[in-house]
Image: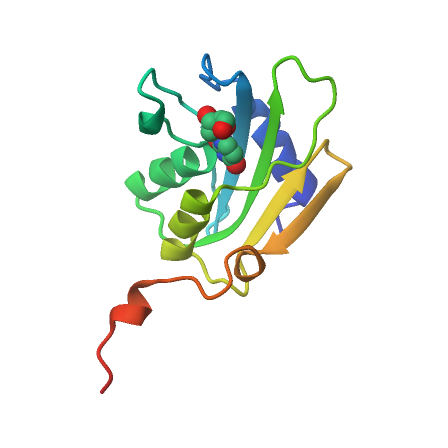
Length: 141
Ligand code: THU
């Protein structure tokens, strides 16, 4: 079993790759696939702000490209570059929706960390209750 502390550590590693010249808010994420592999992601901003991508989605898109479809957990860390202390950095609504495409709301864990010892975790279903997924478009038989 992958330790949460280890996944948090990988999120801090990922944060070093952040490209955030506009907001100055650097985010890192580490996504654990069910097979035990880990995919790191950072936020990647753009001069056209709406073209920016969050750390969580970077991690998901890297993993899906590599053929992964099943995931157990994601750790997220984020901080403004001038801020001294870390606060928990909860995923935005778009990232929660991307998680809902691939993850079981009752089992997938979202770990928010200030450091390797100080973290909290939520199930996806707690952060995205009544989420819309492909199941909602299935015809009733
Ligand atoms: N951001 C993330 O990458 N993940 C989050 O969970 C929250 C927000 C990024 C988007 C943008 O580059 C910057 O943080 C400020 O919103």
